[in-house]
Each structure stands twice: as C-alpha cells, then as structure tokens.
Amino acid sequence: MTTPAAQRLLDAQRTKTPCPPVRDLIGSDDVEAAYAVQRELTELRLRTARIVGHKIGLTSPAVQKQLGVDQPDFGVLFDDMDVSADDPVPVGSLLQPRVEAEVAFLLRADLTGDFTPADVAAAVEVMAPALEIVDSRIAGWDISIADTIADNASSALFVLGDQRVGLGALRPVDIQMEMSVDGAVVSKGSGAACLGDPLAALAWLAAAARDHGEPLREGQVVLSGALGPMVPVTPGMQVTATLSGLGTVSANFGEN
Image 1 (cartoon, one colour):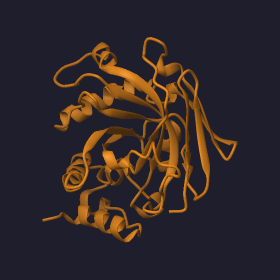
Image 2 (cartoon, rainbow, N blue to C red):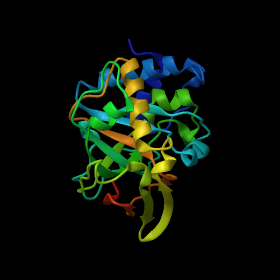
Image 3 (tube, one colour):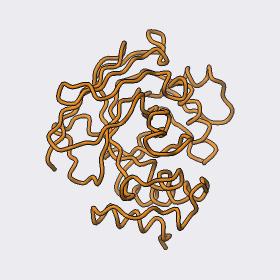
Image 4 (tube, rainbow, N blue to C red):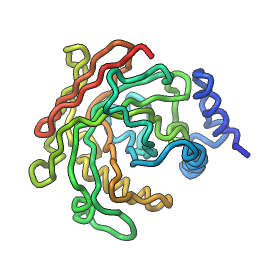
C-alpha cells in the first residue's frame, strides 16, 4: 500500500499539478522518514526504468540559500532521465523546472564498505560537463530538507556533454563555471562551491548511499551538485554551460 506522502507526490506528477509539501506527513527534518519515501517511489519507478546513477543535491551555498535548506541530499538517476541525445529537451512533463551546471563523474569501480578519499578518487574513470534539470512536485518549491529528499532530491532530467577528462588532467575544485541562457550569462560558480570540492561531494554521497543500502556501483554516473545558482527553465530557451578544462554542455528546451 502506498504511503500518503508517496501518493501525494505521485498524484502531483500524474496530474502535472504541484502539491502541498509532504512535511506535514513525515516531519520537516526527519531525514530517515524522507529517504524511506524516496525508496518507496524508487521501487515503483523500477517497474519501468533502470537505475544508472545518483545525484547529489544542495551542495552549493547559493542553491541552499535559494531553497532555504542547509545540508546536502541525494537522489536516484534513472535511464529515462538521461536526455543528452534529445534536441530539444522535452519539458512538457515537468512542473517547475530549473537548470544548473555540474560536474558529472563516471565511475569505474564500486564504492562499498570502508573507503578513503583516495579510494573515491580512484573510483572515478572520467568527468564530464553536465546540466541537471531539476524539478519539484512541491508547489512553489516550498521545500524543507525532508520534502526534497522524499521527492527524489527534486530530480527530473540530465544532459551530459561530449567531453571526457580524467582526474589526472584536471582537479575538479579548480573548475570555473559560467552558464548562459540565449547568450546572456545567468549563473557563475566554481568547483569550490560544491561542498568545497566536487570530489568531497562524491565522497559524501558514497558514504551516504552506502549507509542507506544503495552503494555506488561501477558504470554509474554521479551528478556532483550545482556549481552556481540554478535558473528557471522556460520553453524555447537555449542553455550553455562552460566548465573550464572540462568543456561545454548545451541544451535546447522544447515546448513539450
């Protein structure tokens, strides 16, 4: 039987109508209850989709300030969320989309059991520039940490750029990011804005995912979290992010 919090989020997605927060059902800061709702929704999604990775959310102070939360979280990436090959990116199924630029890590090893920061770095095969299109089923993005965790860390879609760079050629903390919409710069940031270093964000995720029973696996993609403020998505806009040393990633957003 679906829990009330999960059902509220499912109904919002089905009807394309944002719903009230779920914190009245699970508590505004009950992280464990929120991840339980996320796992429930993940099990339902697995009937039609396959897990391809994870995303880290709320890593940037700018984004935390935008949303009024003060700690990171994580969500699950499914194969049908990867719209890297889609032009334009379909946004008709989304409710309140926003876009942010990130570093994506592609993993070549599992991260289970005990591991060191060196083990985390060694598990990275390559990095890629990425755009994450986040969304919230919660009306007006009125979220507590529990609301966004339950809502799969406010995830929706992602786009990976074509470039692939190894850690030996570039330190993620040194990356400078600039994101533009229709040629006008709308967001700037850096690797240091992502929990101090995107590799630190990856280490946080590896531990958190392991502790919640879903460790990171070889072949998965990890979105490390925003390097700067996120921007609302409107139909027809073109977004390009340039990450120094890592290249560019772009997306055209369609009408539906």
